[in-house]
Amino acid sequence: MGAALALLVVLASLRFAGAIGRWLRPSAIHFLTRIMGLLLTAVAVQLIASAVGRWIQNGIS
Image 1 (cartoon, rainbow, N blue to C red):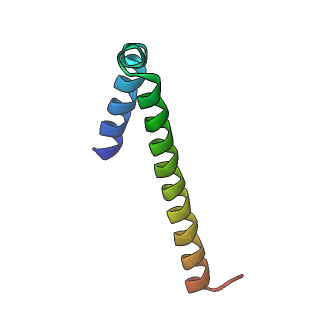
Image 2: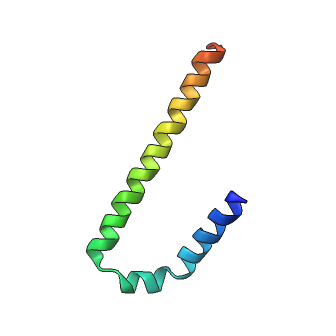
Image 3: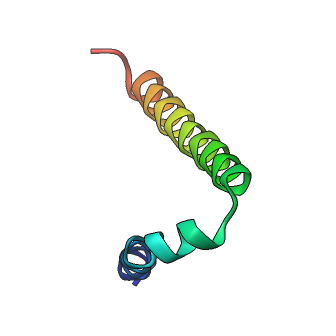
């Protein structure tokens, strides 16, 4: 269910990207780009930390 919802949100955002781009100012687009980059970095760090934690917990082999 969650994957389908995420897919629908991505589809809608890509479909209406041109209209949203015309509606937002360049500074707002820059701000959103920075926030999305920060969120992507946070997810990547969390995934790496979880993997290292499991690696240590199960033993390094």
